[in-house]
Structures are given as structure tokens and as C-alpha cells.
Length: 110
Length: 122
Image 1 (tube, each protein chain N blue to C red):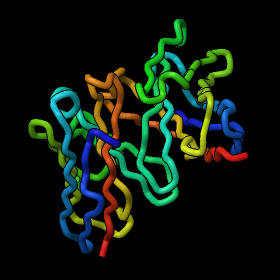
Image 2: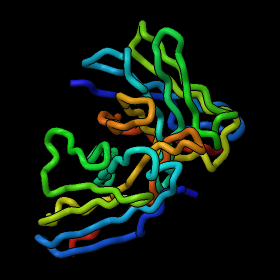
Image 3: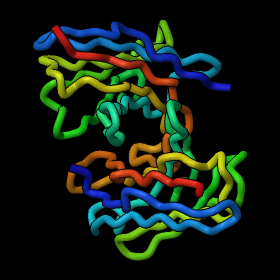
Image 4: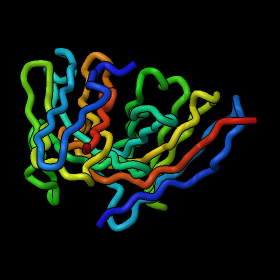
């Protein structure tokens, strides 16, 4: 059972803004940075956001990340149909001394 | 551009040892944190562990798997490998290898292999 909790699903119409939450604790999000990964159907995960709010080269600025205390959020503005995927938050956990992934959120474009 | 490719048997018998390799091409295997991650069918991602320091082969494992996992690196072949002992059906998953640049993944895992499916069954 993951120590990072995400809503199982989120949805929006094309062009809408969708936000995904990631709830953790003081030993992970509260003391380490958060990364977000996008997993399109049948493919390997792809790094979407690192160090809380940084985008790797090639990731559109429609994707943004933020943190507050022991929670993090990923926002997708201007949602596109090809962004229908599973999204995972992740962070190092000092208590477990390991990297933990969130439970994952399936984003559906209506 | 660095690419990763997993390889190994797709079927392993219960109680045996799962062995996979990840070949790193287009870049050096030195100075990075090389991880294995798995994803059971229809479920989420689980970090298995990483190997770092190609000289000493330092490692860090998921506590829940630590007793059964060995990750090692072979600089002569630019590969790192995963061994998971005493497997059961619960170890059936897609196994990914990935690269990280920081021991706590502050920069995330930026390069991933395509994944390889391993089924544990007699």
C-alpha cells in the first residue's frame, strides 16, 4: 500500500484545466521534492515534472506542479485528448529510506 | 541520446530466481543511479531499488523486497541487472529499468526502458 495517496480518477473536456492531488507525510513530500510521471496506455512512464515544479525539456508548459506542506498537485491546463493517461506522483521517503510512488490517477478526456 | 533496454526470461517458475538485465546505450553507466521499477497487471508502480557507483556497486533497496533483491552493475558490458529470489505469482509484473541523477531522485527518473513482462507460473 502506497504512502502517497492520489484520487483514482479525474476527467475533463478538451481545453479544460484538470488538477490531481497527491497526499503524503512529513517523511516524504514534507521533506523531499516531488516528481510526476505520465504513463500513456501500454507504454513506459515518462518524467513530467521534477523537483516539485520543473519541467524536463519537451514537456509543454501546460503541465505545472506545486507543493504545500505534505501535499502536492499536478495541473494540466488546456487538456488534450492525447493526454488521457495514468499520472503518478513520487518522492523519496526518509522513514522508509526508499522511493515511493503515488497510487496513480487515471485522467479521462471526455 | 541514452536508451535503456530490458532483457531476460518472460516466464519464471515459483520459488526460482528472476533475472533481468538492462543495457545502457548512447551514454556512460557511470555517475548515475540505475533503478528497477515494476508494475503488476492493472496496478501501480513500485520502486525495487537502485545501484550506484560503478566501482563499489553501492545499492539501496525497497525495504519490502530487500531480503530477496540483488541489483548489480557490469561496466564492461554497460549493463546493470536485477535478481529477485523465491518468486511467487505476486511478482508477476512489467519490469522497467530507469536512470536517475540523484540518490533521492530530486531530478526524477528521466530515462526509462520500454519494460519487459515477467510471469511467474509453473
